[in-house]
Image 1 (tube, rainbow, N blue to C red):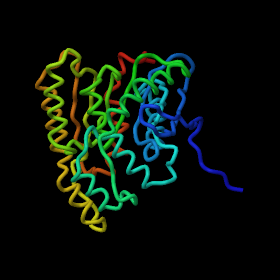
Image 2 (image 1 turned 90 degrees about the vertical axis):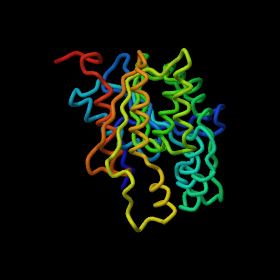
Image 3 (image 1 turned 180 degrees about the vertical axis):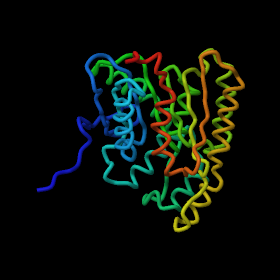
Image 4 (image 1 turned 120 degrees about the horizontal axis):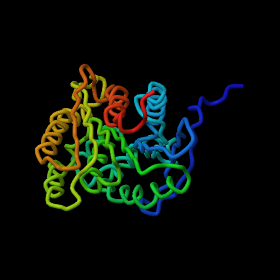
Length: 287
């Protein structure tokens, strides 16, 4: 009798969020050692947890990063892909963008006839007031935290960096969809520069050099969506804008991966990003 394949030692649990009014499925990958350890929080766990978990296993095995607790945020209704795609758009977007939302519906991303936006403040509240306290109360962790997001998840990670950067020490921002409600994210950076709680942390923007390259069999609406997204150029612009500020507590880097597209870049970019934002000398001793 066959059994479902599983990631070794990983588990899931359902968490009902007061902030978001939705049941999340939390994917948990424990560390490969006992004692307090850093935390990696990844987005889009229904789509990416397996790839990130195996990347972490290899990075730890090669002493590229220290042992970590990895918690991925997904949805209890993950068996319904249209719900996942619709809900992630809501949760990862800071404000509404009707053109993007209509294009996503036209691309078949929702059978509900409508995709909502503007839920990022609630997801940020969930992470800050529910998820991180839950992690601290259930696992032995340090205050060293990393946030990982790709595409719309990259947009959300950029949003957290600008609005509440102190929640995380490191950010891996992969192929961020910064064209959402453009120039909203760039305006937020300008506003952040005027605040006392300015952006801080170790940040890597990572994109493929062929972000706009899509297979011609995909719907015209999706091809138009990616054609107008300017993912690579806007990520470069955000990196330049942040670097030019010379924020005292912020270190940013930009990596463009040859030959990679938006869809292959996640598999290549996440392990590269984690390796880059973790400093070997600072996070674990040499052998």
